View 1: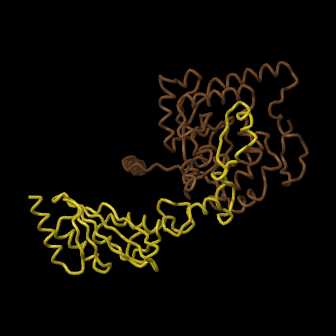
View 2: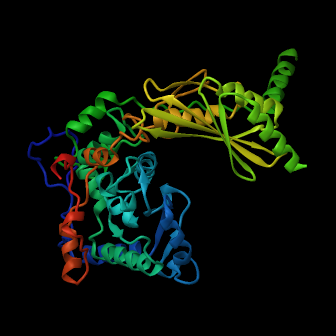
View 3: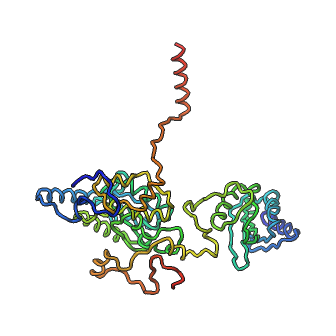
Length: 259
Length: 192
């Protein structure tokens, strides 16, 4: 794989082949064994961040706890997006929530998988007429598995998770790469909802280069619009404002000057 | 004691001109009042009749009559009863006076009604965006707002036979949606 330093113009043919084609095996037999081992390990140890937006969250406690026991598949809940592998979205995503979901998704480390539970994430569900809920989750981020139903029973949830595990083992669960390869498409849909000045703290384009996933559709009209509006992120100043501490410190300073 | 107070309140309100009072149940009283007299009535209810709790302001859009109906729900802890004060204001320009000086929580409800119905309340402390922070369309709870047209304009629908569903359909899965219930992306409402 060749690293790309220069940004190709959108639409122009790329000088190099990007990454490994999905599902393709490497020629070195030892590498194949190693890849399979890695994929097996990945599929059997998944931390799940569940973003419970709607009623589908009700089905998760039985799926997680003793009755259906997700943990026997190696899936555990995780508290922070930075340590999670799966982003599980249970139910309708309002436009306001969608912003947070995208921020959460972009904070996760690759490889990352998105599961949409309930009909609402598939096509708006019973909120199909609602002006305030997003309809297709996969317009805004790549989704690996949809579990349809209103609401799906825990059996269906487990079945969906097993499907994801199977896809990871086969090397087919690479929807997250699509976010980098076609970032312009996803950003365009996000801008359509949130307006032209929408920006996230994550530099997705730089990450696409980092992962060697920079493709001809990574940049486009929408990323150009983003660059126009983008404000550079600045680190927050470190400040401690504890009154007691400040008083003690100032007292110590005065004592120091007097001596 | 409680019954005494409610009878007293009935008698008092019956004395006032220009309002119509109807007792809908033992604990509920429906009062209809002209829009210019409403602040005075609320002042009276709060100051003299122990209705200190404004539990909600609701709004109804009577589009055919060209009016907004505002309902102020006032609760008294002493008489354990609710007075709903109904008033109507013209839909255009949809401007009314705030009762923030009588009931402080009114600021919250007025901001909500302003967002959902576009009614402007003179003197309300803050009528900026509230729940729909990403919203730039017309006030969505108005009757003339067509939610379905808005949705068709701003969102896409899932395809009915996408490639990824073909595996499932081959295995006997998939979905069956009657043709008249199918929805397609960026379809204009006029076409149907």
